[in-house]
Image 1 (cartoon, helix red, strand yellow):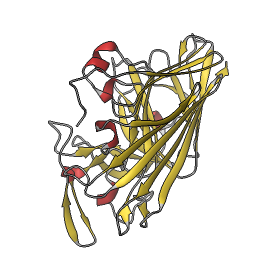
Image 2: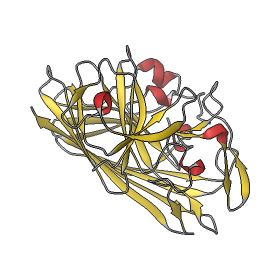
Image 3: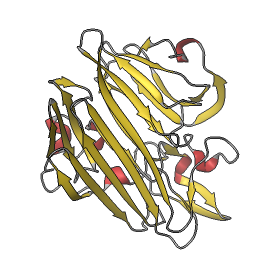
Image 4: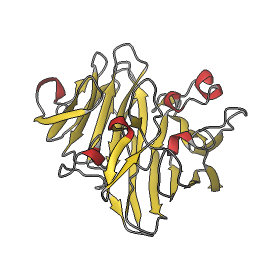
Length: 297
């Protein structure tokens, strides 16, 4: 778990009119990103930083899996696997282990940093892996190059995504997907349904009054967020391994989430459903990238 006995030290990247705050010790999280003073991500509050609360950050890594694993349990190669629950009072394991551990800054420049995590088997995840986040800031761009290497001597499930929060007030979200896996009251997905009605964001739709927590599949890797009262909109481009997106928006919340991810919620318990949980051979790496770009409205 995160070490809450010391203050999280921020690492600042700057490039032209862009500024980004990283918090390596706080789960390898991003604390803020602004372009000409406009918040492109929801900024982490001082209270969340002091409490070492990754859910209060601007974005945090999802490794080695995203979203929930039902009841923290699944079967792997004929053997039952049980994970420590990390999101009480829910019975499920959620969002992997990367956001709960301090990351090291392996290298940095004025406008980039390489954050690394070496995970050893524990109650939260039984296989070792090494994860890297190369975070690069441009004048109007923020790029996340994500890589995780399987250090186990046999194939193991291993994936990487990110969990960004965006300012919710006035936000209009636009993206296209084929299906949406609606989540039940237990937080787990049901059968997919075609995208339609309030789940159809192809032409753009407000998220300000939405109440969503669902996984969209068949996403083409592009999305746009527009804030009508702000000078910049946000263009999001994700690489092909990130073929799903989780949209999380709650009425009254300060931020909402559009999370590029590589697999379904609860994928390890949904054999035969796509996109499935990636499996990496010994020494093989799962790699992907996400580019956020501020554009003139």
